[in-house]
Image 1: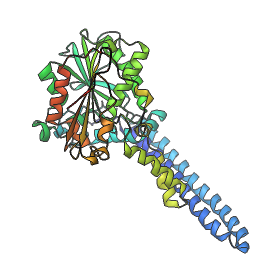
Image 2: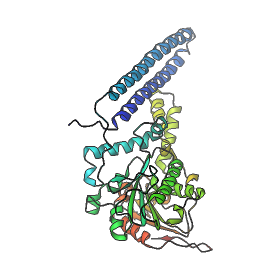
Image 3: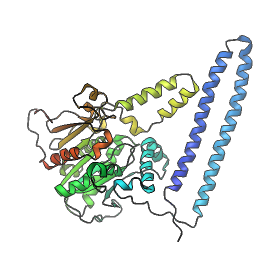
Image 4: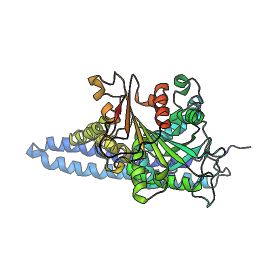
Amino acid sequence: MEKPLDPRLRPTKALIHDAVDATTYLISEGHESTARLVVGALSLVPSLRTPARAADGARRLITGGVLGSVRAVNRLVEVVSDVALDVSPLEAGPEPAVPMRSDALVSPVGAIDQLVGVVNGVVGDHLADVGNGLDLGMRLRHDDRWLQLGESDGTVDAPGAGRRLVVLVHGLATTELSWSLDAEAALGDAGLNYGVMLQEELGLTPLFLRYNTGLTVEENGQRFAALLEALVAAWPEPVEELLLVGHSMGGLVIRAATHAGRAAGHRWVEQLSHIACLGSPHAGAPLARFGQVAADTLQWIEHPASRVIGRILSHRSDGVKDLRQRDLEAVGPLLSGVSYLFVAGALTDPDHPAASVLGDLLVPVESASGPDGSNVTVRRFGGIAHHRLQAHPEVYRALADALLAPARIILPGHVPRLLV
């Protein structure tokens, strides 16, 4: 029996064609930058000014024709190859289900899944704009199956469904498989992750969100809010309690979802008791801000290589650009009646001056510590890099203890937050 086509083949091919077109425009940018330097220098000599400009006009005409031909041939190849796929006797098979195990991440299908997550983080907004099939969209995973929300008026198929749900939300340029990263080394079992551990210890039913991290935090927050509303409506059991855990960008998406859900009057907000953000850049990430400065500076410099690199950097996804903001309006204020846990990691001791700059290598300690509030607990851990916050016994212990505690009811007057 012949193996069916991978459903990601056509969208990957489409993205390659888009990349070829983008490359021709970068080449054109390099040519124009070089020409400006050469013509500008030659124009300083009056006798060479006119012939230099004439030669540059001819150069622009020839270059434009060649690059235009490359784009035309590129699109012709795309059409022909699409037709070939359309008439292929092999039908596209279902998206491969990757087990949530750390040892599965090194398999070919696991590596491809992680690569798709990276592509979404880098150019996810483009994928969504052109309708490319590599766009991860947004959906929820229960065990090793995707919940079919919104596809029927009935309840979803979720064996072993409980009434207390915890939804884990991954960060930038990853998928839900990132919760299994380093599981065997850090937690002692390749099949463990925070969701499984919270189910075993606290009886929570874990769900994992997969989404396109290249979109803005605001858009993902709105989508997540709507998805949670659909989840509560279709869940086989009455949802008595909802807990949300996010890593990095995931924490911001959670906060944006609560902001959108409250504004829309969603009922899932009433079931929400706890929110945990692990290494989330509530006050922005310096590397994201540096990327913007670098892109602007390189494009300002009149040099072919600088302008091309600057143009590439400027095409970062909307999701990446959001992380540079110190005050993201989309996340809104903290909700009263909900307990928040903000976890900050640091390569050094959390109280060391370097932690305020380096933090966990991606997010400074103060940014991850989140906004102040009487319903906020902050935990800071030294010697932990950003990605390890997703699989670390001490971080899990802090998470489980926080989710086990009853949600706080905010009383009048400010009570200083707990710093541990």
